[in-house]
Length: 255
Image 1 (tube, helix red, strand yellow):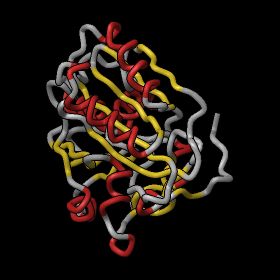
Image 2 (spheres, one colour):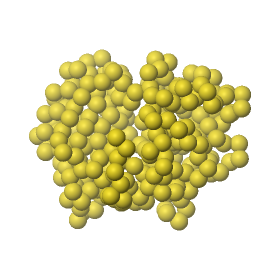
Image 3 (cartoon, helix red, strand yellow):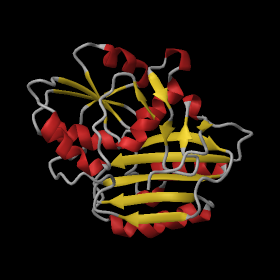
Image 4 (cartoon, one colour):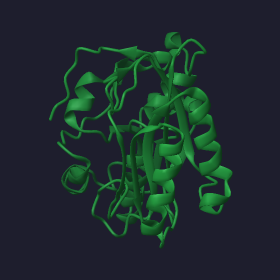
């Protein structure tokens, strides 16, 4: 959600897609962002793209259009998960485009979202799913993020980083006992990897919130919400509430 009176627009995006030439994409992507005056962070890996950038509303709109449909990237980012929000001040200090082994680090070669992921659940259908008594609701984020806010009744894995999710799953989750799992994360990307990991381990029903918490806070009215607290975001806004409004600016990151 953005406002015509808000000076900055923020675009969070990702897509799992085979990018064998991801190294060659770095400079064109950096130049595209720089020409539009954008700041933020973008990750490129052989498995896809993941980033959050901010700038003038018209610049963000031009960037999203070029990324999804422009000739520069050959139409490969045609299935982007895109989310827009607003900021009163520029939430990033500079522009970074980095090359990585994974766009979200899990360290499990069997977890390949381009081949198999869990079942997507739209924000408007999420409440009914997590209210079902036979559903294990699982927060895949780290403990600091969970402490700021989560869904009612969700299991906190107690991890310091997403890379520890594999160990948590091996120790605490059982395909025979946990037959239906509904997981969520900030924007959806961690759940892509986490759901692929669980499916590879033999879990039968794995669901994840499409677009993550941010989409839920944007689409679901506060009066109907099962979310409690605030959602940590990885920029200087720190946390967002319903309607993706800036909240809790005094909260400090857990470094």
